[in-house]
Length: 283
Image (cartoon, rainbow, N blue to C red; front, side):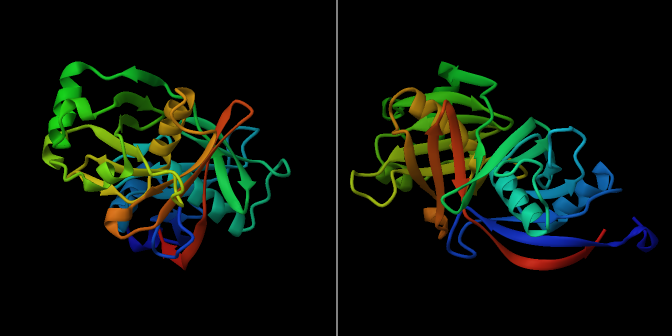
């Protein structure tokens, strides 16, 4: 990539899923990505060193308002939650006007994702689970060992695939979730999300932690895609109310809050986004 090929493009860094700046999950957004190859996008996403970087493009589907491509440091994702909310926030802040009042339609690798404003937050309609159901016994035993928990303390465990390939683990309490000291190496290639309920009367209803493989297994601050799948799983089985708030990132010093609402047969996943850095990037 020579200097002659570079041009200035609007760039934002957005904090997602927290109303406390710098305590959510950061996202890098290149607002005008026209003309960039997949290779250049991947190279830049690797350089930002964030969990995801997104690139906004004109839509190719007639119903979409914009198109987004979502990259981690090493691969492209068809869908991810905090990049969806952060990209929509940035597109609107950059002057985007939805084709339909009150509804924003994002085009991404997983298809079309609808968003709306809800109680001052953007929320996306959870995409359908493309794989859902019991996890094989050998994998369950492996994950129990990786979480350093007796297998019978995993109350339920399920595949939750909605783009990312998640495995959800339900524990009996938020305190148990927060106390996990996992063997990250033992988790291997699996994306694992752990969720447990807080005591009644707590300001939040569930505690979530998620672990993502890569060059090294890491704990993610706040994860929209897992929370979307977990909501479908737990609300559908009657173990979560129709509306709740999940906390995530607590052990990392973050204050993530994911707002879940079941409405008219759909699960909506919402959170606050705030632009923390705004300028240009040469790409």
